[in-house]
Amino acid sequence: MTAMNRRAFAQTSLMAAGALALSPALASTAAAPAKPAVGIGSGAPDAILTLVDYCLQTTYEKLPADVVAVTKNQIVDTLGIALAGAREPGALELREFAMEMGGKPEARIWGTDVRVPAQDAARVNATASHALDFDDTYERSVVHPAVITVPAAFATADLLGKVSGKDLITAIALGTDVACRLANSSQPGVDGFKLGWHNTSIYGYFASAIVAGKLMGLDRDQLVSALGIVLHQVAGNAQAHVDGALTKRMGPGFGSYAGVMAARLAQRGVRGAKGVLEGIRGFYHQYHNRNYSREILFEGLGTTYAAQGLSFKPWPSCRGSHTAADAALQLVNEHKLKATDVEAITIYNGPGEYPLLDTPIEKKRVPTTVVEAQFSNPWVVATALVDGKVGLEHFAPAAFKRADLLAVTQRVTAVEDAGLARPGGGPGGTRIEMRLKDGRTVSKTVSHAKGEPNNPMSRAEFQQKFMDCTAYAGMGAAQATSLLQQIERLDTLADAGALTAAAVIPGAKQA
Image (cartoon, rainbow, N blue to C red; front, side):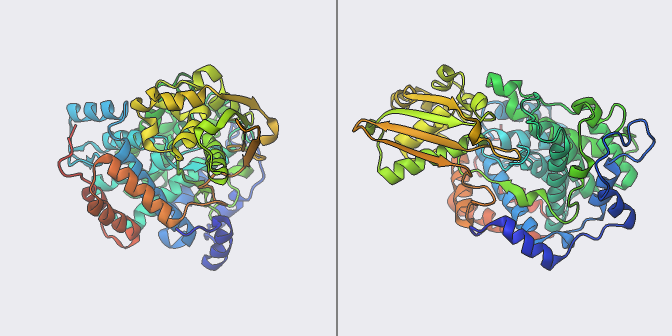
């Protein structure tokens, strides 16, 4: 992808490609104003029906060109980071467990030639995708959709056989859109993490059911049932973020597994609840105290897509830390700084990032686990200052013992600044001040991190990230280049499953 403003491109491509032609009934429902009580014991149709009809009516040909391009970027990104994360703690144990349990060989565990039941493959691959915290982000509601949707799509494609690249792209785009619409419309304007939710997990259950159900060709009643089945399983809290626990990276795996399983059960005739979103014990009522907006849920349905608002990560850490990484790297490059030049560092963050990435400062200065490092602004800034980059090697256990990095983190303090919060939600900005030993103070404020829609990664940067991740996983450069080329022409492939076959790493340990 070229370094362009995807939002501006979206507007022109949407006018050129035309809007999704919804049925009259669907169009009138989508345009309805927000009515928080609709569906709750009223007998009115649940909002899930509108989303299901939208997903069933949407074909590849109705997707705007930029949505197709971004979805292919999601696939490139996710396969690369999953291969790199496959042997990380949590992901490795889950993979070994799936192999030990065995079962019908339906879908491939990425990077290996081992097949397990499709839902198990989705769980393993989704966990590996999230392990390095290197995944895409929907900024408005802080969801990482691809780590749910891409593993569910490939697991289902392996199960079915001969799923076209176009169908795979369509299913992933729709799953991404549904997850982000649900997140936007649930307690609008309220940070899900402050409510205690892990947004990627709880909305991912629905997304994976959409992806699997779309590819399996479920009809309207079956797809509603699949969503009703995952409703009964939706979970995902943010305590793992607080404790630095490995379950944080496993949440997407649970959601991806559940969606594939739900679609398979619905196909067999299992009936799920119908009041999925607005029922008296539906998602909006039970999880969000009836605080939701139909207007936001259906805003631009079929004409705008969540893919158009996705960010991608150049650094393998929490997205909220990326403005800090960018600010530190810019200071290093602009002033030719070395760690020995710096007396003290102050990081300023908004109320969304400060409690997650900056405090307690004593703990953030000395991460002892990968997850703790991924959620530490002092650590990210130290790696930028000492090594001039933020790379995968900085989030491995050996790095946590580096005296040069720890010496820098001890010079870091953090301050909460409400003025750095992002209007409308999403990761806020960062200001970094460095007091130098020569008496000068230099500072940098970054509001939009590299990889956001208005500051996108270039096609070359995506390719380099993929090559770095596959090299980290042990894949040779020639094989990685060939795999990348196949993904980039995915929309021409008759069998998308060929990609996971091409991703098997020769000589790689299978467990």
